[in-house]
Image 1 (cartoon, rainbow, N blue to C red):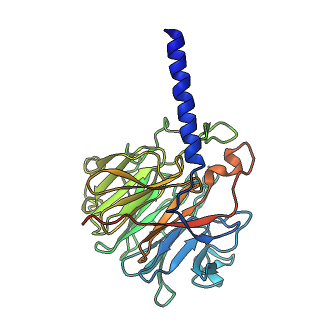
Image 2 (image 1 turned 135 degrees about the vertical axis):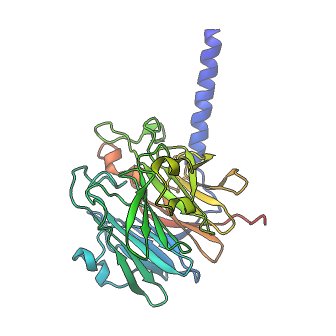
Image 3 (image 1 turned 45 degrees about the vertical axis):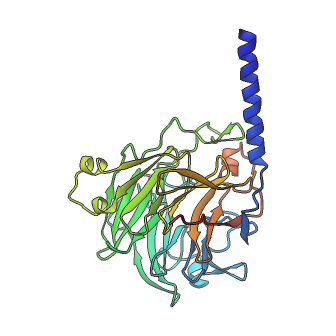
Length: 372
């Protein structure tokens, strides 16, 4: 009996390893290279209605050129100009562009976020200090900055803004804050902001969920696993629902924006409004399309998935080149564009060995056909 159990265990263990090997070496004809970025790591991706492609880059000690770019003739061009992409004072220069998003009016919103605490997935130190944060609204028709929000009513020693979405109906911005496990609600008219769902079970990372690649857990040299509280967020096209989840959780959550906009609700009342959309696995970036699909990027199985309106989870594409897929944008050409940041291949997660595979890419894949 023991021999039979041991044989069964070995058989399924070998079967699982073979399955993972096939995934890790698979190449999908659906996946197309949108931009070859050489040694420059992309993070933010967004697309206008006229198919202008914007890509942002986190500030790094090596291989850093521009913070925000427009891709023109296959090359990154500094946007809105070269001056904003030079090193300078915080108010008139980019510090560390974390996320970008094109709204329904083709305004490009730029989240310039440099946390001083544990709010960055790129490993900022945990010493309390003054972080640097601003949200910029850029009119892409005029290529001009219209307004800058500076979050002066929040404690910037604790803030760690990561992703954002713009609610054009309510004139609000929603931003994820992994550092405080919260959603930040910003009033775009007054510039005032407040925290929501802070420290809730929906926004906190699950310590039991550890990212693992090829049998190796994603841990630093001290054995501490990578962990991120609420990170990716998506806003439905009708502005009615905000979707969100921590990287280190496997369930997707959403809440009606009418409740997020209601500052009179207590913490308990607001938490009671959160809906559990079910198991989706470990994911990073989120994005909603006009047909009600919610796209989710997943690094542990090198895939892009989507949750359709009927609640079913589908795999859009799986390919061994999809290395830490992150931010996404949808073009009028019927493609989903996304960055691959390769974060899990950084030295801090690999015993000080740099395993990044150059070049960095922005990929594109055809959107699923609408069933409407």
